[in-house]
Amino acid sequence: MAQVSSVAEGKTTKSVTLRIARYNPKHDSKKQFMEFNLQYERWTTVLEAILDVKKHFDHSVAVRYSCRQATCGSCGMIINGKPRLACFTKISELESDVVTVEPMNNFPIIRDLAVKFERLFDTHHKIKPYLIRDDSEITSNEKEFLQSPEELENYIQFANCIKCGLCNSACPTMATDSSFIGPQALAQAYRYVADSRDKGKDSRLKIIDDSHGIWRCHFAGSCSQVCPKGVDPAMGIQFLRGYMLGFRS
Amino acid sequence: MVNKMRESVIMKIHYGTALAAVALVAVHILMRLTQSFAESLEYENVIANYQFLPYAGMLEIILILLSIHGFNGLRVILLELKQGRAYEKAVSYGCIAGMIGLIAYGSRTIFMVNMGMV
Image (tube, rainbow over all chains, first blue to last red; front, side, top):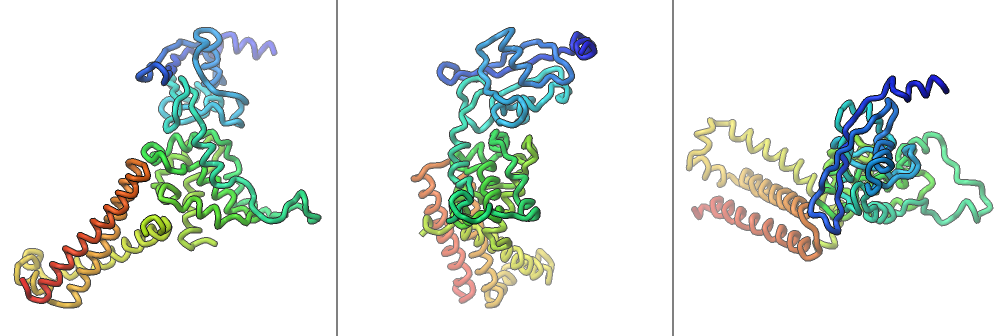
């Protein structure tokens, strides 16, 4: 304990300028940046720095967060130009004396760093993110739905999605097409289509087979690059296209 | 009809026309190589090409393939640029009209030259 506190007292402490985007759509015409000089340790995350600002400098900074361990998907934001989770990004790993935080792109801003998630949740809900089949594990007398490790492997990485919205924020199609279903929902569509227990493939493929559905993806791949949980939505989208073009069944 | 056709069917046509066009345009370019480039553009040679029925037929198919592929590509770009029910309908029908217009005009040229009307 004594050793840890001595490190915290100054051996590894550095300073950084944190630039926070401030914007209230109710009365601001454009985004402005406020700068704060902060001390940070090797393990200090961007979220901790923002909370430090709220605690010691300006409590009015709006930020959404919850678990602080990359599980809830609440604290997505643009950090030094790239969509990242603030709780999962250490200031030291950015290797910069200036850290700029902005709200996620392609989402309406509520205030400062907090954005509206309605579109993300609507599109996620639209693709029916649950197992579709006539029988049930709960009501039938049969055992639970069995699945082999190989069948699990088909979709397991897509089940890691925490709905943080970073993929949608990075997607270039989302920036221009306000009706595009988005990489998050498409990856989740694949997650259930590829699940051997699911019987709702046809209905899901019909939902995404729209003029603003799966075919509007240009395979930029930025969604996969920014995912903090290692999900590869771009790959899932290509697999879904395989189903629709008849290469997969 | 535009609204009833599924996007996957449209995109299959889009990809199919692209592949077919690449193959036929390759044949078209290879045909140019049978003589020098400047020679191939001489008036008599161009007319002779049009009057050779298999070649004129191939040009007609290339025209149709590229018109379908090109105007669907334009439709996709315009749909991504702006959204709205009326706008999207206008874009879809506009692109179909443009495609039909281009095919009709190009076909008229091919038929007229092929039948010796020029």
